[in-house]
Image (cartoon, rainbow over all chains, first blue to last red; front, side, top):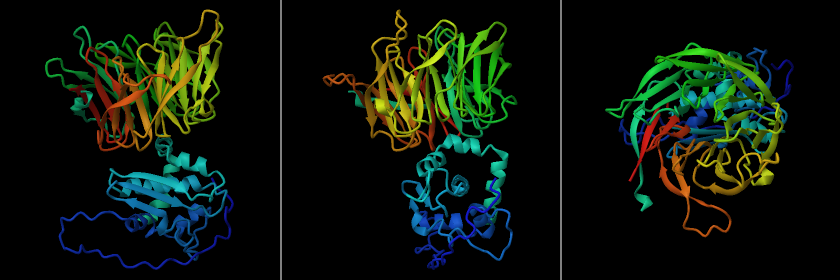
Length: 174
Length: 346
């Protein structure tokens, strides 16, 4: 596992102000199926993530200091615009930006994103996860690995890896 | 008109509690009054044996092979006589099962791969077994008396995990396809287990541009179809099957590329003895293709879409295979945990 800090001084961005999403259907019809949109997926992924999640991803795994409550959003690892959803076609694509070009945690971030969506979205969904173009030294290799379902399935049978993913995701379920 | 053909769902088989990765029809069934049998394997670490009832034509689970593999069972293969079943698992082993009066006993466990075994295949004579793994190697095992299996060759050459191995239907020539986008052809050029890679079909030979997931041969063995994460199917042909008398090898060459038929990764392709090949993909769809005789074949044989079946399953289709017998059925295995049996009807 990562021992030192991969990115000791991450740039912190301001959180984007979002409009409060209406929780009520306009028609008030409880049987109306509301389509899933990109904000909902963004919320699934990040709304409740706290510092531990972000630190794990940027190599701060051992730091438990709550004085650095940075979220992936604040680190711009992921932005609203990077989540594309087509509910009609049951399709989601998440594009994330590792904080450094050689971030060895990129495949772990991607795996966590995939597991989170796997557990949260209806099973009809097809999910593609990739790093932002130009954001990673081995972009093609990372993308290929993240989208090979056989490798993902094998990784998720590795108890150590599953523990790590669960640890990363635990705060997101609070 | 061929357009009136329909892929009719005969049965949906439930029982596996996780995604179904693969299945294999027992080649010794489906004729002479012997009911059709196939095996399926799953992320639930089990293998299930399904048998057709001759009066209702419906399949039911006859046996569940469990508590042997400790991880996903990725693929399974019956020996040519149908007496033995080989199962390849992410637990790095390949198990050999023998049918003893309806009970399946694990009679041998093949160990040696460093990690996940992904595919297993018997040669036509049932004397050799091939396995491949994420460890990038392909192993050839010789079947010895008393259910002993001796590794006779470890083939290195792929640069990434090897997704599938398949023996040629008549010759002792082995084919493997990989995450490294290549298909490799392996042959024993000498006479003492001197297995070598005799050809690599890759991008420079009009090959695939992403992971090659599967391959299948036509009945006569002079053509092969491959499918890939690059969303294409490719048909390859050879002038002459197998090794020449002089020891030379007749190379395989690209005949055509079928593109635009699947929207997501194509995981499986299988050529029927009737000349129809079926493909199954992550777009939940099945496609059937046939020889297109209507075109003038200046550039070699072309293939056309015979039928498309969208939403064949609720999730990714991992495997499709035609049954043996007079009137083949198609079976498909899916991430939705079910297996479907289909009949091609007009």
